[in-house]
Amino acid sequence: MEDSSQYRIHVAVQVRHLAEQSDEAENRFVFSYTITITNQGSHAVQLLSRHWIITDSNDHVQEVKGKGVIGEQPLIKPGEQFEYSSGTVLATQVGTMSGSYRMQVMDGGEFTVPVPQFVLSVPRTLH
Image 1 (spheres, helix red, strand yellow):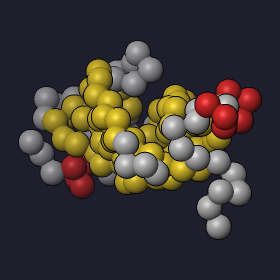
Image 2: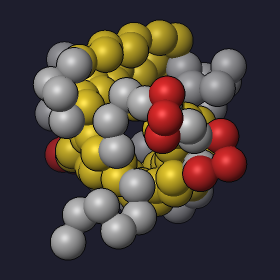
Image 3: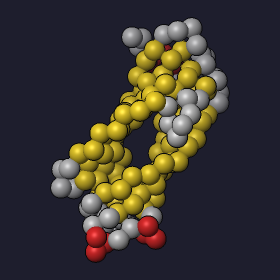
Image 4: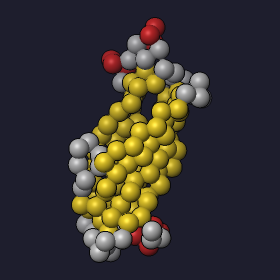
């Protein structure tokens, strides 16, 4: 495994609560998230897999692992970015997600890019 800091991969997250798909009476809170992965380094990388830890405010944890994202294993060249949207459903109004991406450098090495924890929250739930 290689040191991920030398590859300079930046991950940005935007979260949206999907009220039209949620049902508070049924404890169903739907969120979409858009991830932008920017390659700020000098090596092309390919996203091989994802690993998510999704926790609601009742401490119920879902772990999601899989190949690629949204059916793709994108190649991200230096200076380029890849953006995708996905979603998750919680049983509570507030939760968190964190995780990582497994990347491969085109010379064959692999490394992990951590995704810091971000909050999923129904608007006006947190102060």
